[in-house]
Image 1 (spheres, helix red, strand yellow):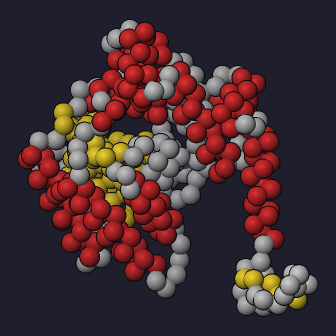
Image 2 (image 1 turned 180 degrees about the horizontal axis):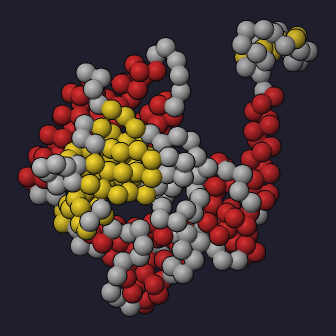
Image 3 (image 1 turned 180 degrees about the vertical axis):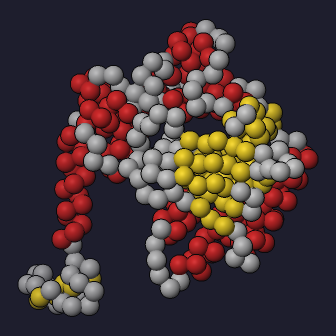
Length: 339
């Protein structure tokens, strides 16, 4: 039995065939044409408090992109619900809790295309209805993406732009969508499939940790049970492939999640500890300090100090004065020595 929230197909998924790749190219070609004509519907959940543990929901450290192909996906979020149908795209920002229930169409089974992001790797998979209402991976491919930050920037900027208002909003969204979909299209055509050091059980272990880091019971023993191997074998394999101990990787991923919470939420330190998979806030503080050189509270205080420093910085620096507003001088400052 797989861990909650982890698609079973992560352990049995087939790589895409030449036929699958051709179909994926056609999907992106169609989406690009629709976006060019302004007919690709974009759906993005409203802003919510990130990295919350919500029953029946999960979240990721990176955004996810869904393209509706057949049938519909019923997305649920802490404050809203919406359906994603054919010729529609959904971007779920990092840290946003969500649940998914899928429905077949009147004459077609459910199907969509999903993009996920990892470290220097992105995944593209076709999803189908594995059990009533439950999506799972049909076929999947992983692509080396040294320019992963470009994909992430486009996805995040598209999501944030969607919630803004302005005279050029629709034009900006169209350009961002075209760029993001075009990059997906290109990587399917020219990208190198495979995972290099993330092959097999190592990648599966990483997926489990990233999907289940909030589960305090998830450790090397539990991961090995799910993968059908011994803890010693898995630990040795993981260290050989990644040069990092699996126990350290689990801690590091949990700390990554806690940093995101410290940066973007007002949750208490104890709440962040529990949401990051630590059952003891005091132990969480010690591990956090080992990784970041400061306790969570000190880290948050430094972030707040940096934000205050940015708030008092001038907008523009002139040779004889500083401008703190949009065009109105704040006042002349004493020139620096030598000016």
